[in-house]
Length: 142
Image 1 (cartoon, rainbow, N blue to C red):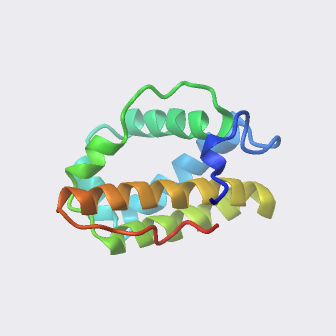
Image 2: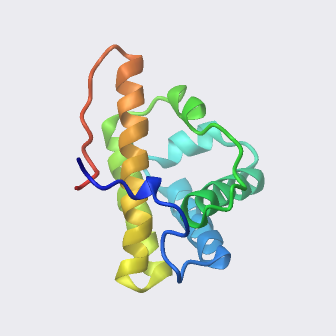
Image 3: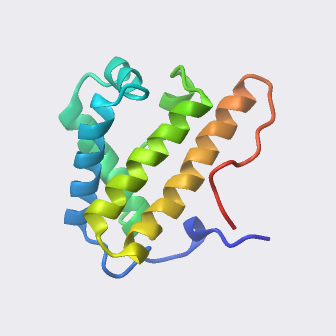
């Protein structure tokens, strides 16, 4: 059995702050909107960017700090998007680059990255299941 950091109680890392999460989310979406691979998906799906960024900031606050601020269901909106494996790959590349830039310390960035990879796998496997396919995790390690 592998260790799943998403099931641990408490903050993902003691140095993570709300400001760090907000900066990471904002910078990531600035890049994602301009990206040739995932930009068109985001631009077609998101109409109210300030609201979306606030919502995703709440999501990451709940994941990283266990604040419970996010009350949504993130899977459903992703299941209706035209997402393919290359979208998840590119999302992770941009997210990981942004995490390293914003967090500066490798262990803090890694706390975000481990969770992002597991989330990407979860969404990707759900998309495959929706099509009647079986997919294995491609991004998680451990």
